[in-house]
Every structure is written in C-alpha cells, then in structure tokens.
Image 1 (cartoon, one colour):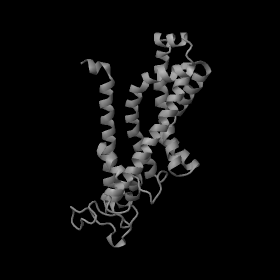
Image 2 (image 1 turned 90 degrees about the horizontal axis):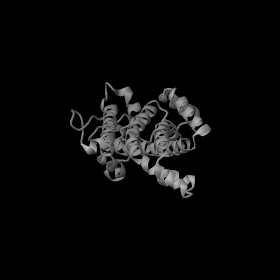
Image 3 (image 1 turned 135 degrees about the vertical axis):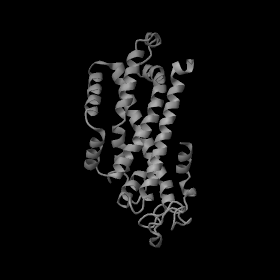
Length: 263
C-alpha cells in the first residue's frame, strides 16, 4: 500500500510520459521483456501509442483518490447519521434504520449504474455514488456502538454536569467508535476501489482520456487476445491494492481486538 500511495503521489516525476501522450508509430507495443517489446515502453503501449507504465502511474492517483474520497464522504455521512439515530432514538432512529434497510435490499452495483446513468458521468458524481454505497455500514456500526454506550456511567455523569448533547456525542461517544471505524474504512477502501473499477469498466466512471485502472480495463477488453497487457497490468494493480488494503484491515482488526492483544 505504501508503494502504491508513493507512486500515486509522485506520478508526475516517475512517469516517463504524459498519460495522454500519443505516438501512433508505437501503438500496441508489447512489454519490454516479451518479443517485439522495447524499453522505451517498459510495460508496452496501447492502441493509441500511449505508454502503459505512465497510464498506470497516473491511474493510481485517480483510482486511489476516488477510493479515499468516497470512503471519507461515506464515513462522515454514515457516522453522523449513526450518532444521531443511536443517541436520539425514536422516529429519527426508525427513519435512518429503514433507509439503511431499503438500500441494502437493492444490489449495490445495479443501483450505482442506475444513479450514474441518471446523474451523469464525471468524478464528482462517481464519488457521490460510491459514498452512497458505504454510508450504511458506518451508520449501523456507529448506531450499535451508541446504543450500548449512551447508558454507560461516564455518559450519565456527563449529562449530570449539564454537558450539551452535541458535546456528549462528539467528545465522549465518537472517540469510542474510532477503532471499528478505522478497520471498516480499510475494507471499505478496497470495496470502493473495486466499485470504481467496475463503473469505469462499464464506461460510467472516470472518462477518457483521464486514466483510471478501471477505465484502462474497459478500453483494453477488446484486445484481450491480441494485446493482453492492456487489461492484465491494470487489473493486476487493482488486485494488489485490494489485497494490501484487506491485509491492512486484518492487521488493524487484530490490533484493536482486545482478545488478540490479551493472547
């Protein structure tokens, strides 16, 4: 994960070409280690003569940024709704819970495709749609934590001294939810990356010429038999980042799990 984040941040310096630099005389060049390849394009070139290595490096920036922003927006929205619903209870809790249940009743990818088709393509809409898919898990996790914490002695003590509701939620309850939220965010980041890749693959996410790994997969699907590197290499990048995010999530879960720490 650290390697990919570093690569994304330094894409301008590390990439040998601009992501949209086209040289038709070099179109569909294979990777350098295969017959017919050239070290001018270490990972080959695409159907427009664009360097695959450069597009993967720039694509890392786009894909990781979309994943991170989607998780951030989804976490902020879900945490806020979970805090309010869990602490207030009653009608507010019922509305938030029913909204979460209603969304979970629809296949997320189908819902995302419909929303992107209705709302239009583009990074802003893509991040909003992806965030819509992640708020539920945050809201339900925080709500469950609030329900168990709001009757705790230290919360009762805060009420007794006249602490306002917003202060109790932010200063006393929210910090006690940070451990599970951190673990969930790691797994959700991997999920958002896959969702972005799926939507971009379908032509509803990041639009050409801006590179994302999902967009590269989509544009390379017509060349799977004749130019395997167009789709295989960005697909491998997605797999490695998703694996890394899941491993980070597993590690964080072990760190925050008191049973593991005790052992």
